[in-house]
Image (cartoon, rainbow over all chains, first blue to last red; front, side):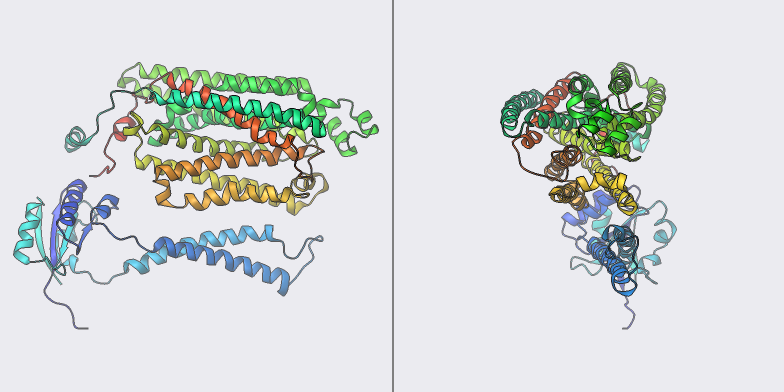
Length: 180
Length: 433
């Protein structure tokens, strides 16, 4: 695939998370759909404001946890009943109460791993390149104290001049054009 | 500066009306009505059971212990959670403080319930009925193991020690209940400049209070329930009740908070954030509860020793396997799977339903703990009119307790005003926006 060229979008910087959330809510209300918020720490309200669809991480976590628990329980059952049965003071070889503890631990372990890796897989990390880092203000503060709203060029409403005017109407600190 | 501006612009004002809404009186009346109906049912069942197998009034008393443990859990568990909250801080707790204080101050009613236990000690505890264990064994009333245990545990399991240890526990809980509720009210009469003093003061009372609570609840649960079976012992027993109390108190507190939020001041104060937090905390207790219960089971199951395992066999064989399975499902599986959901924890109606079910599960668990202690029921779950007392007596006792709780709730404003967290609770839901 040839490298994309042209404008990635318009990036508006806001001073406070409150300003960002209000602007994002406004933009979403005005019909913008290809837009995203960038904040130094998670702000649930920003996600709500632009109506981010529900992700599949909970489902991945659930499936991972159930598979982990089932796998460990099956492993213990196989070892104790089929592969290497030992008579421990007359207890049944299939001693499910004793199997529950490792099975539970594996449920937690695999749920945790599935959550972490499922999150990475679904959000596209690690990404080696993102056009937003071309914007100097983004580089200098997106992870510390600056709050950004980006209107992407892919949105059918996008028009360089009009969109810039629109963004400026939301009272940001600055608006920058970001190249791919 | 910006923050000041933000507060002034966006914060909701404190509601003008801080007292409990009028419909709390309606709850009280409804609870009293339920109580009276179930008392009538309990008396009828008592006669029916007595005519059937001569155990009607015995079942009445056993069910009374269930009701006692349930209401005791609300009263003293509420006090414990109040103390935990004073030490841990947190907005969830500021929200619950007044309901928890109201729960705490219902202790006199629990004491009245307990007096019945003392009066009919001989019907409930074999160590009280057969102080002379050797001759009771010879006459065939008790087993050799029971006779041995009654003799061995005599210094602890005798009516004198039972009464005085329980009275001491009540005195301690009463002292804490009195201090916590009186100081809670006094704090509100003073200005915000006294806040640091009050935080320290209540911390200093609550910290040691939690330690004392864990000791007293161990003593109470061993005397009131565990000693019905003289042969058995488990070091985690008190802790099981401690966790159970956290479980039921949080469930009840959520029900109350959500129900109160139909009107001011909770309409303003109960934000989704804190409701979600309370749901998460409840979830933690669901987990802790199964952890301890299953841990105890696993250790005794693995040990498989004749002096320990019988307690479980009494509660698994002869039909009781159904009850323990239901107990597991009600007490852990259902609340665990439901409370995993974030949406459910943020939904008032559904969270209330789950919490109501959790309190029902606590009662089922107590039934499983209490009834198999007796010879006629151990390893032999069977229907009798008397066993229905477990559905009648505890409901009546809890209903009267709820009525008393509602009366206590009406006595003071529902919000502690002299607390720095109050401003944060009044912030809009979207704290950043």
